Length: 95
Image (tube, rainbow, N blue to C red; front, side, top):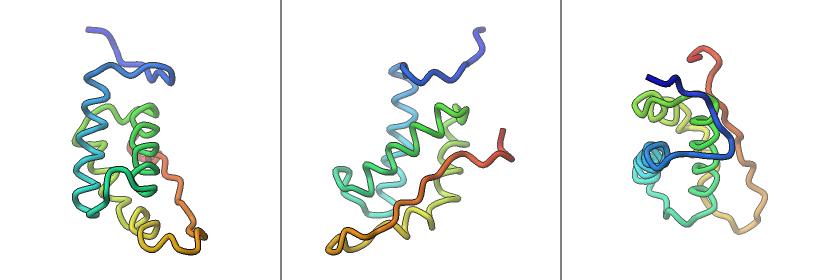
């Protein structure tokens, strides 16, 4: 069996499926439109976390759920466009 190596340039269809399922579950939990700015930021974080080594779907989902309060700070009115987006990376303890 080949060992997994993070690759910044390429995600297989299986990798994308993992990221998509995690993304969908968090969007559903937060009641976000998948085309919103918040969802776009979430997608970036999910893929980044995957590329940093969180290849296991349950682990990736748990990491995103553990940081849900950070995402929720980003949610809400965009009227003044002054929201701060929180950049999330996998917790070093999980590596």
